[in-house]
Image (cartoon, rainbow, N blue to C red):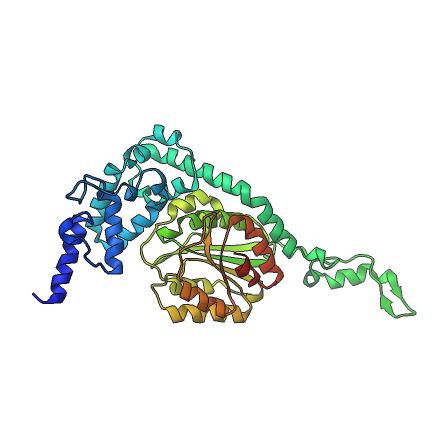
Length: 390
């Protein structure tokens, strides 16, 4: 057995036995193996799991108390680094060992849970294991959180969009291209001034429109990696608000290595959209941006918001090229590293810097600052100032 094979086998046993095993203490793990080890430790290193010493690290418990917000990321990690049959075993152990059975399987318990955004993330991550008898209760819990976020965001966001695109604030004629010139001239012939040889209309007449023209196209491209869970929830509500505004043509797309268009679900019900999201393990941002580009008809009236931590698993240079093209064509491109109330986000710093150098604003944003950001984008203001504030 060569040295490389020996290291591989040693690391393998280290993963099986855990970091409490004295025989494998200090074994060096690769970054991928470290993620696998942390995922396993969250379930099994608690005194009755992999550890032979019986002295597990209680701080690594996944599924109790404050560890619950990390559950979505944990699920993403195990789905990324373990085969599907092993994932099923680990998930089952997580539910049994970490006390999630009562949470997910008993409607009475769900009714007594204080709903918050972390709980919504947990239910999204494990939605496939919620039994039929608990689904309606789980939906009501998610609905209550969505309603609270909607109440917090809607009025300010609507006001910002309406104020930014209201043409009447800049011109007494709301839509110059819709004037019925023949009718306007005929009705105002009596006001012809022979001295100046000018027709001075008292009133303009307009063609009736069967369909209201959309002022702007807004495209939300949302990374559905487990680590983006809070951002996904806030972005879904944002998308629902945009979709309800007649002046906006709103598209909502989520992605991991595949792309799902959730525009219709978002228009109808953001809760349905949240349950339609599959928290994934891989990420192909370039592929999703390429799909979103197909919706751009008028670049100068399009806002594209990428919500992602930028850990790209696709073609990095292709992504940069697409974002640069959109920006140069006149699209208002925004790269949100996170849309949440939490602290500094975890993201690919190098890729974020490259995107920023393209002239694309790249930063994290709290929901409270979102109206200011959207209004500035529609008005064509410099969005780079937000990078300094966040």
